[in-house]
Length: 291
Ligand SMILES: NC(=O)c1ccc[n+]([C@@H]2O[C@H](COP(=O)([O-])OP(=O)(O)OC[C@H]3O[C@@H](n4cnc5c(N)ncnc54)[C@H](O)[C@@H]3O)[C@@H](O)[C@H]2O)c1
Image (cartoon, rainbow, N blue to C red; front, side, top):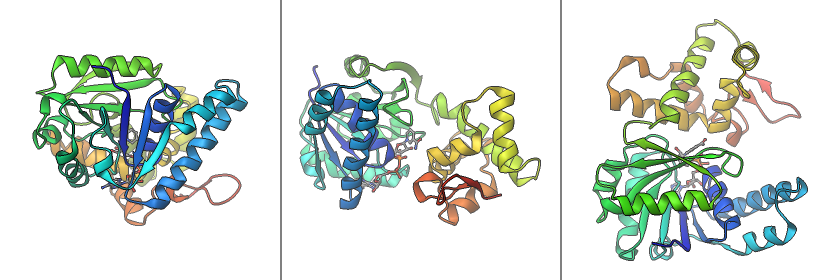
């Protein structure tokens, strides 16, 4: 099946990045969110990120204009339903995602493929509530989407080969590389990455190091391009906590228990870059460690 039209539900940091790469690859994109401000902000962010690519010579001004013209926004989920491919990229909460797929159900075309950009939630469980588990799979982009090369393709227990093949071709057209993962909690990347971040938060919580020393240690000592706490702020601390909870519940192993300090930051609403404060405070000229 050839995909031409793409609906993206959730216009946050992932949704706007996904819209950006699909529009650049020539797909018609309809972006949805429950927040009108969120949709406006998403278009501003996409424009700014495309400008950066133009100034670096990665995209021509003509291509930028074409891509922007291919992105439309809507607050009506019913307009997303009839498109060829739907990518759910809303908040990492199972009840939110389930409600979106329930609300989409009456508007879908028979051929519509459903995907979720979830970082950790069971694809098989999300799919089981829809009328098309064979046309449902995980399409997990990395942050920031326009920069990161990998897309994890996650096969639910019922995902059929035609759907997988279609999505593999879509990822190739985006110029990205697919990695295939089975549907177990947090798949491959986050199964490994988020417990490492959680361990960095424990290291902070137990006073082994402060924010600066922990990040510096991993950058200079393990050759990581970003420190784990800096990376946590970038991902969003609410998302990191949600993923730890999925691992803890889904694998029933105490080694995945979320660090209480991570929970405390989330309870404070200090979610990282998106709220201007997390393990660093981003409100000034340079990020300042908060511990
Ligand atoms: N942040 C990351 O590094 C990262 C990486 C890969 C995947 N993901 C996954 O992508 C998804 C989105 O994460 P994000 O970082 O963009 O979060 P975010 O908080 O930046 O954005 C979430 C967006 O979803 C919208 N939303 C909430 N409920 C909605 C609904 N019912 N209908 C439409 N929109 C709704 C919110 O208004 C918000 O704009 C999550 O499933 C997350 O796990 C995140």
